[in-house]
Amino acid sequence: MHYWEAINDAHGLGIEVVNPRVDPTFSFMAVDHDGQIRMDCSSPYAMAGLVGLKDRFRVAFANDPDADRHGVVTPSAGLMNPNHYLAVAVRYLLTHRPDWPTRAAVGKTLVSSGMIDRVVARLGRRLCEVPVGFKWFTGGLFDGSYCFVGEESAGASFLRHDGTVWTTDKDGILLALLAAEITAVTGKDPAEHYRELTAEFGAPCYARIDAPATPEQKARLRKLSPSDVRESTLAGEPITAKLTRAPGNNAPIGGLKVVTGCGWFAARPSGTEDVYKVYAESFRSPAHLDAIVGEARRIVANALAGN
Image (cartoon, rainbow, N blue to C red; front, side):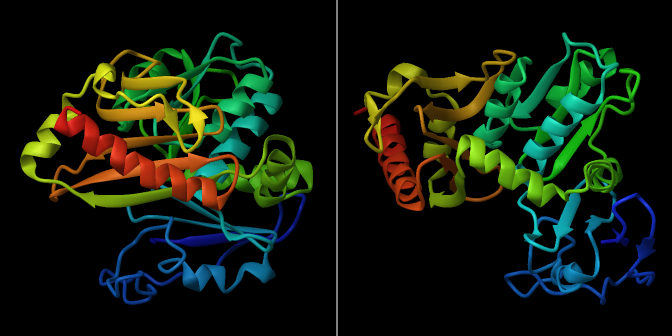
């Protein structure tokens, strides 16, 4: 992280830079889960230094070296899950930006939390779900047809106060400063806002795992069609959607997403390793999430085998 900043006053005063060191070797960083130095502001291991200061500040935040991703730390939650913060940001912005065009949609990648879907629906706005990759948001940010866009890996951006374009790429500093605004304006930090969302919509459980796959299986996964999925239920619930194209723009997702009323999974081949990635979420329980992940691997295996 190239800087860490924090705010300790609910009225927006008291900004403090808590790590002023400039070190091209990043030796000030805590090592990540695998013992490597990695400037991942979504990792509680890499962010351990700032998490250790959480009780000193109302809200604290950091960015990765090129400042396109954000990490938000609060006293009650420590480092917030990026999906959780994105849902909070969406609710706050849609209720505190009166000059934004009502026709503008909220954009999300198809592996981002379903909590965002519920927040957007409750506020009567339009959701646009696109494949993984921030490039899918660029045109909509430029012409104002997207008011906010976000991805599960802590990348996001949004329009100016007057509804005009700010940037067509993800902006970590913007989302960090928004955390300070939320805390200053509402008197509650983003984690407190997220607890309000879970009280209304439930507390989702989210996971991402890697499953082994040969190059041939990965190529097959990229070309699946909905008809290749023969199952009608997932973790005890009826399947409501089988997607190989994103519902927001009909672009190929390069994999598969299966949705039920209380959960979903998506499977996408890795571009660099002999694995495919399974993303999954449950609005019921950790046990339900485990069931989704287990059945996801079986569903993918059956689809790849043509069963």
